[in-house]
Image 1 (cartoon, rainbow, N blue to C red):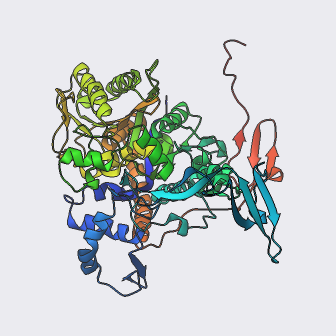
Image 2 (cartoon, rainbow, N blue to C red):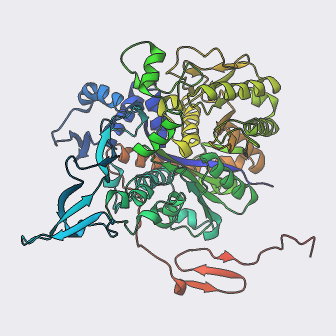
Length: 632
């Protein structure tokens, strides 16, 4: 019997704040949730943004002055609101009003046929052009005089103002590099450490306790990025260094790899020796790999995630040149005004002009069903199925194709097989919803055809990118974070940035939500996550609700096992809540174990039947079955 991948914890960071305990979801619905819930989330955001500190039983402001929390939040809530979610580009990553560049030019002498200048000898190029004459100055310095016959090609330092000024930035003032010994890590890896730590702390079960119940090779990590690490500490610095007259560092290439989020979780968070994959695809592709490993029984614990920090001048320029990003002038044209509303830059299924780049990290922890019950883990939902299909022949690499029809149809059919037609009627869609003219037509047609085919009328559709922007590889993780919030609070967040649907949107059988929809915590049995990958690698997934997951577990393991799980879960919930309370006071630490408990060959004991690693309670079995027994 196949094992069910149960979602037992999640964590991360997005433009809405910390993901665990639904804080990111709460920020998106801050206007409709109860006052105490919103207070907790805004307190958490204030700590993240370094606006509040907690010490000796009370909160202080950034200068250390004691504050009354309710009074302080009353005054500062507008600031926190304005500096989260999609908004105008701020200067914490780079200055959008002074983006650096080199302007190529040719200069020539204005009088005779030569021009002359002085410079330090150590700054001379390695290969001196034939048109140069170099003289050493006799002034006691290391300067030389260079005389150039004819013209000289030069690069002038310059800046320009960005025409794209909307982005899904992390909360202002959030500094992940200050939370652990980051040692010049690229920002994407800083977010990986934060996101994975958040998920592991929220688990409510000590990692050592988990490892006592599984073999070291029964743990898997599937995490990656899409754009790799592109800031100065990663591939960005690697590619720019010589053109800027700098030296390449020993870390830039190594830390720039797309699979580094997985490598960091293995090496510095979990100490994992099981399988890991850095897939240069989407969160759903990694989720598929993790799901299949648990379903097959090869793994009992899987951590799935992605981290992306691609808000850089170069990435913005690349997407802008493709005509993919929402530029200020286009947003002004849509609204017919003279002030850009950056908060509404991403407008899925409405009149729109491009997507909004964002950054973030999302991680989810999966247990097989037996382990989840045995350890009393939190049951937040489960993974029904994930399908990945390419588009086939295309006109261009960015144009849509047929692959997403395949992934959605198979996901719907699989969900129907699990929960039946009635359960499928109680489903909703987390659309890819990029906010581009092409997506609104193609994705709405796909979803509308699925609704027609499977007999669903008024199918609820939402798009979380309207709040957070497009975090690229992390995007489906944002969808999952929001979905888990729906099953906690019962509200599907509407697409708050739109006031109408575009005329070319297909919606005869869809309910594209322009307002929040209250469905209740058990009102939806299934969530369909959809991701249309750039280049044509599409993915769709069905996520099963907690109440559906519990019913499946009871059918497989019996009511007595569920009752025992409920007892064990009390301690798990208490411990996970302790983490949330500590995080809201800035008292939680990231998990980063650099150079600790490193294993070498001397720590391995090997026989023909098992491999034992010192420090791990369980051995790795070498008594493997022949997968081709019917052929041998």
